[in-house]
Length: 143
Image (cartoon, rainbow, N blue to C red; front, side, top):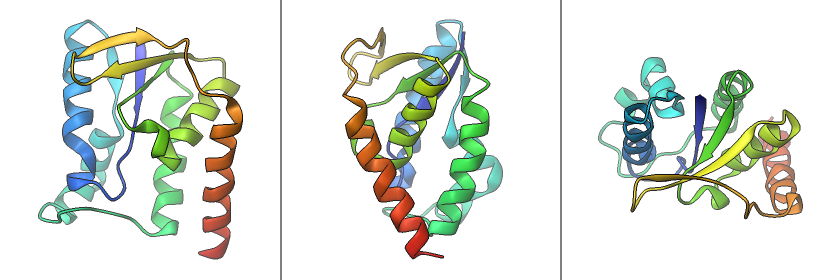
């Protein structure tokens, strides 16, 4: 199965690449093809630019560029896999909304046990829509 990883990155140490890497490695071990935004970011040079930064963030224009790139990858997958902390990530909430609209399967990856479970306890879509509203407003303000 081709899986897309979604989780928090902005403001976290090394953009939370470690959590994305652990999930990717475990899911590849289980035989899945995995698309990880952390891997895509490394290709674009984000990791090198912010290598020694304690926490990281991007400008609204950069966020829009990454989101467009990531959503393009997401729609080619069979399922989205939500990492710990995804609920507070604007980007992961948008990716979840896109996955719902595209009819993709949804899973949770539990970092503590390195397990993957089909998610039947997804939040109501209004939670996702509130994050979408915040992102749209911040993008418009940033223009």
